[in-house]
Length: 462
Ligand SMILES: [Zn+2]
Picture 1 (cartoon, helix red, strand yellow):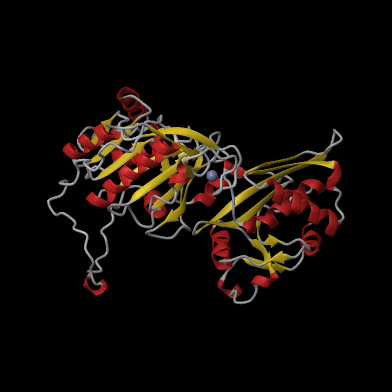
Picture 2 (cartoon, protein in one colour):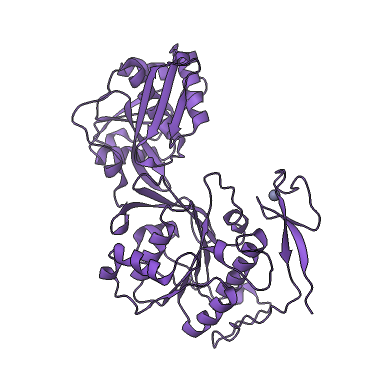
C-alpha cells in the first residue's frame, strides 16, 4: 500500500520542508515554497541496470595505495570547443548539466554532437520534440551529410524515466543526452514534471545510473534570464560538471562556459557561431568580434580581454548624447549597468566630464557578455571618444581595470593579451603601469604604453 505524501519545496533553491514557510532558511527568499506531491513508499530499488555490466562494482573499504591510479580514458568528441569546456573530453560515468535560456540552441548543439559521434552509440532522449521534428532539425542543419544517420544515433521521445531506463538496458548506449530534465517524470514521485521534487529525483536516478554503469549522461536544463526557474540551480551540486550555454539569441555567437567541473578547470570556455549548418566552433574569436571598418568612428574602443583561458579582443561601442528628458538614460548590452555607472562617476569626479546631462548607451559587439574587469579601460575610452566625438586610431587597444580613484589597475596574464593584440595586427596597447613589473617588453613588436591614471589616458588620446 502506498500512501500519498506532500512536502514543501523552495522553488528557488530546492530546500525541502514538511511545513509551509514564508522565508526560505537556505536561500532567504520570500514566498518561494510550493506544496508538491511526493510518494516515497513505492519500492524503487529495482531500476534494472544492476546487471548492466558483467563486471559488478562491489563497494567495500579499500586501502588508498591499493587503488590503481589509471587515467580514466576520456571520450574525445569531434567538437573541439566542447572538449575544451569539459577539460579534455567526456569522462566516463560523469553527469553533466547544460544550462541555458530556452531557444538559444542547446538542442541544436547537442543533437549535432550526438550525430558527430559516429563511433559511439548515442541515445538522445527528447521530451520536448517529436521524432519528426528532430529529424527535420537534423535535415535542416545538413547534419546528415557529416554523420551517416541511423547507425549509432538513437532517438527516444519519452518522459518516463522507467521507460527510458528499459530502453537504455536494451540499447546500452555509450552516451546519453536528456533534452530536457524539466520534462522528465519518475513514477516514484507524484508531482508534475518540472517541479523541484521531480527534477531532483529524475536527476538522482540518472546520477546513480551514470556512476553504476560508467556511462556519461548529459542533462539539458532551461533557465530564464534571471536564472529564477527552479531546476538547473538545484541540480548544480548533484552533477559533476555544469556548462552554461549563453549568448544573445539575436546574435550569432554563443559561449559554452564551464561553471563547475570535478574533472578539470572551470576557467575554460568554448565559442560557437550559429550558422545555417549548425553550431560551428570558432577557432579565432578575436577575428570575428572586431568589425573591420574603412573610416574611423567615434565611440569605439578595442579591449584585450581574457575569457576562460583564451585571449579575446572585443569591440566596445559607446554612444553619448545630449539628454532630451529630465532623467538621463543608461542602457547597456553585454556589460554590467552598475559597472558603467561607476565608470561614469569616476569620469565625472576625476576628469570633470559632465555625463549627468547625457544619455549613455554601451554595447559589447557580438552580443557577448564579458566578465573580465580588464575591459574597463576600453569602456572608459569608448565613452570619452563618443563624449568628445573624436575617433581613436584603429590600431590601438586597451587592457586595464579602473579603480574608484581613477587609477588604472594591473590585470592578470598581460603577456597573453599583448601577444593576441600583436597577432591581430594592432600597433599599440595601453596597459596599467603596475603591469610593468615582469613584463618583457622587448619580447613584443607591438608598442606597449603604460599608464597609471585615467587623466593620463585622456591627455594621451584626445
Ligand atoms: Zn530557498
